[in-house]
Length: 262
Image (cartoon, rainbow, N blue to C red):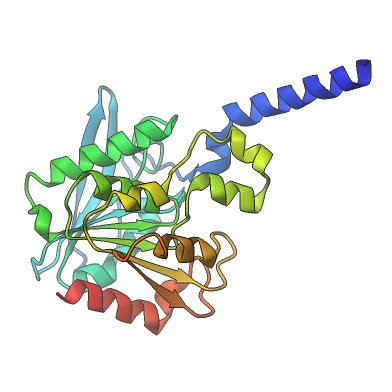
């Protein structure tokens, strides 16, 4: 019995370690100094906004303004980097007449705190949304999620009434993604469910998905399964598109232009 007991104890120890350090395996923030000065291309008008989500913790964000004044995009980015690199995604949105707010999650960039739970992620996103609705009209607000940010954006959409929800390279839910890359056993240990599929069924606004067909991080089939959930969901495939290169494809550019034109 001793070998079996030892194996069981080792397995429990490994499971405990994985459970307690999973944030380090999911989120890859780039930290920026508090006095870091953002620099982008000349002519890009932006303002730093800080949202005090709780005592001692504020989320840093960048609001890029457009002359078009057509409304607001709230953008939830992927699981790595910071606003120093994510700020560049603003270009097509402002060119199409929308202001765009890009948020750094806790522990990313100049944002304070650290991510410790899914509930916290959703609460932070909801706080930012409601703060922005003090100065923007909800019927002129579009939520945009990319990769890890797709479930966060979808949850906000499910609990509010934005104009549209746009999701780039979404996953069906996070457990499903872990199963595809690792195993069902590891998926049980993951406390981040990020159930995009559930949130989309609770969303009343139109939902638009776009996904590369050869994405090797979040499989294209994830979006196909989401698309099948409801007639309210519309999927656009990008043939030969990967996970981080969709903006290089004309299909993606046309998709964004069409959805932001009306």
